[in-house]
Length: 286
Image (cartoon, rainbow, N blue to C red):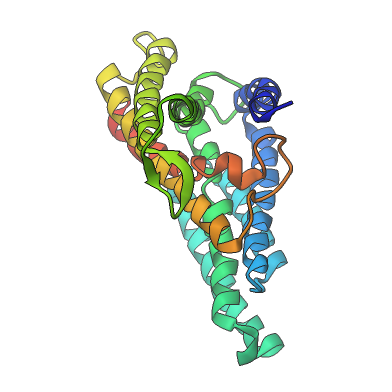
């Protein structure tokens, strides 16, 4: 299959599976998030190692797992944040201590400690917000349900619709390069198409699943605004991962997803849009 065929095949399996996982919530969702956070963190460290840097990989993986477990146990950002801050401080100072006693000044301690913390902050923490979104209504922690699932699905659907619109618009109409030094294939036309796709996707999703009569309501104007912001932020997330890969000199962050590359390649924009949606929903939902 070509690249598009592999993308469609992965989406055909991944989308129904993802919907089912979000519907179930609880530790089923947490287990999947733990797996994705672990793989994503390891991929960040792989990029660093391509440059000759040596992060403390297993300390970072342990921190990513612990942060997701804490998210599942607390269920909300407010209760989770103090534990997360303490864990980040422990990881940062622990990495520095490891650099002092195991590697010395010739072991690039600044790069080792910095990339260790970055792997967790970039690929470990953001996916935990899927759990927070799933529990956002506050009364859904006891079992499966659609209301919290819809809130968690919203940034995923909007991001992927914007990404798909950008892909097809850029492929067929793109002519002016957006940031050729970072991502040579991305075009201004594709970026505009992505913004339009995410905006319309947000409005359609809100009308279908977060409209009047539902437990949580997202007005169409608010959905359009949030969709446009998600579309813009998603493109920044995509470019951020591209610049990391370009620095490392690799095409894909991994090979786990045919046609998509690694976990970072598939979730690069999601890392940015999940926390954004969690921060925005309390102000926009009715």
